Image 1 (tube, helix red, strand yellow):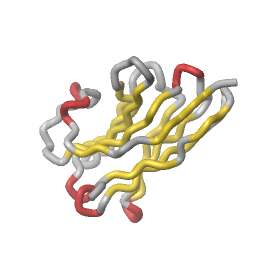
Image 2 (cartoon, rainbow, N blue to C red):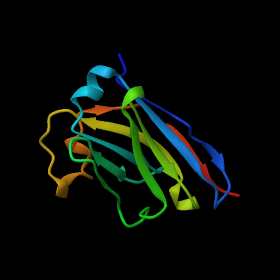
Image 3 (spheres, rainbow, N blue to C red):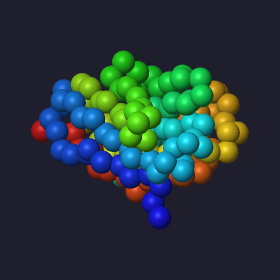
Length: 129
């Protein structure tokens, strides 16, 4: 059983926008404390690009995407989205959705992959001419 399923990736030109979706099982969604989006380019480490603490409604972003990426959720659909605008070639990578249901992550550590205990299988985003 896959608890998180990503979709919406594709190949786009620099400056374009994409909106990724992460459909979460109702069981996992109802228990999620923190949901995040990560990306991984070939030969590079997985990095966080957005995180959302459900109970307090706080979102976090690294400087590399701040102002361009926005994480939102739709509780009625158990879905988390990542709106990506003004895409750059450096944004290319496999994008993963992840959830923490243990509630042990502090605001400071939201970007650490080890704190998430549920992961999707990823969706590819390619930005290039």
